Image 1 (spheres, rainbow, N blue to C red):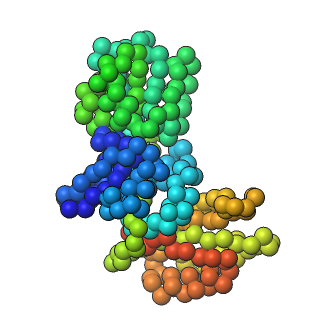
Image 2 (image 1 turned 180 degrees about the vertical axis):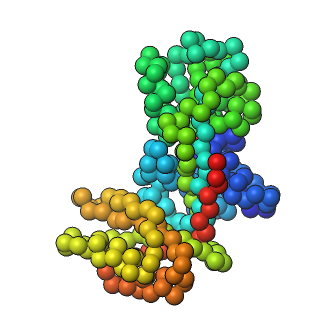
Image 3 (image 1 turned 60 degrees about the vertical axis):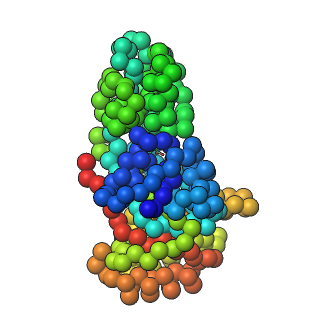
Amino acid sequence: MKSISIQGIKGSFHHEAVVKFFQNEKVEILDSPTFKSLVTDVVSKKTDYGMMAIENSIAGAILPNYSLITKYKLHIIGEIVLPIKHHLLVLPEETIDTITEVRTHPMALLQCENFLEKYPDWKLLAKDDTATCARNIHEKKLKGIATIGSKLAAEMYHLKILQENIHDISDNYTRFYLLSTTPEKINNFNKASLYFTTDHTMGSLAKVLNTLAKYKMNMTKIQSVPLSGSVFQYSFHVDIVSKESGYDTYYEALEEIKTQTGFLHVLGEYKEYKIEK
Ligand SMILES: O=C(O)C(=O)C[C@]1(C(=O)O)C=C[C@@H](O)C=C1
């Protein structure tokens, strides 16, 4: 049976991402407190894979996770885009007036800013993951404390949903990568994640982007990340989807981009996968 490390515990959105990704396949899920420990679980072979959030449609990229992937030389072997619904979870006897503090994952806080602004007196605490907060509220009977998390977390840790769907925009999605220490050949992949540097000459990044357009590669994401060991120099993460042009043009595009970049690493070739809400 495959084992997968997640950031957080069962009932977190990472847990849901693994269940939806592997569907009917039986897998073992290992809880890991931080993104770093998730990665080291994979690198040390404690688990086969790691499922890691990389960006959210409201809150944006989780920048340190890009650096974790490259620092630990991980390969992206799959992705899942999961609809995220956040609810305010509390002990059964609480009301909105008894809440004094909200503890949850920092990305969850960012996705619910409009709702939280209505309660300026609440103390907001960033914690490891939504489900651990839910479990602590239940197990330690934490009075006056709410968390923001999923319906699954409410059910697993016997909390009441005090307010449903408190995320700022109803269309809310988080994209996760399935990571491995070794590349895996994915049949019929249609998406690739590239990682490269360009020099500081005028138009060097534009040349790469033009090459992608020339070979009809649809760029779905570009993220600059500071290059470690340098001052204000950047590397680029670019995701591309090839719908119509096929593999020959993809490989031709890669060959051309190699000549336009300092280095080019293909971090993963995998299938686009979005769960509709
Ligand atoms: O805390 C959780 O439940 C998580 O799975 C983490 C996480 C994240 O890392 O962005 C996952 C999805 C949501 O965007 C909110 C939090």
